[in-house]
Image (cartoon, rainbow, N blue to C red):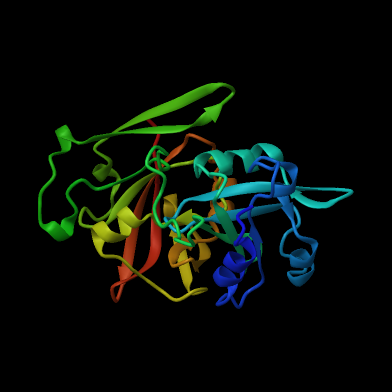
Length: 277
């Protein structure tokens, strides 16, 4: 642990009003040590019922990880496989510090700091983001697309040792309104919420409702599922996604074209088009 670790912890947590906890390495530890997987009991008591079976950890640049929880004689832990994946994906180094903040039931915002207290705000360079593709020529640029030349390759998760790859030719053909903003979503095992990536937001200059404002999923045959807009660490996402995945039996590697609908400039609905190619 850095000699100034206590001071650094105090500095980072000074302006945090929500329940939170801090992690940094002690001598002899590494980020995959069992102690790093522990959720402090004091934090658990301060958030009764919020963390029982799983937790979703989100970072500043919009990625999220679902980690299952288990209890042993020492308390509540994130299971080893899931935690190790989080460590590897974020390239945690010995001098890093993590601040976990309770945002909502099952949701933690994780802020990553270097030993000089500089916060990491972008994804590590050699970590590929989840596959999610936006229109190559968005309508607000008033550029036409050529259907014959537009294709996307979406790589799904690993299932039974195999990686599923789906090539989507001209995803625009799925859209009800060709001028709508959209992105192509490949399902992973983390399907608690539907995140809006910064690339999508910036490309279409999207605006969102307040935290807990309603959002509607419009499904095939006009069916609808209701959800809520959530804002975690400044990153918008929509809950209710789990119910959609369950109802339509969506699996890791399945591909969905997500067409966004706006009212008064605010995203109020996501029209889902299931890809079968």
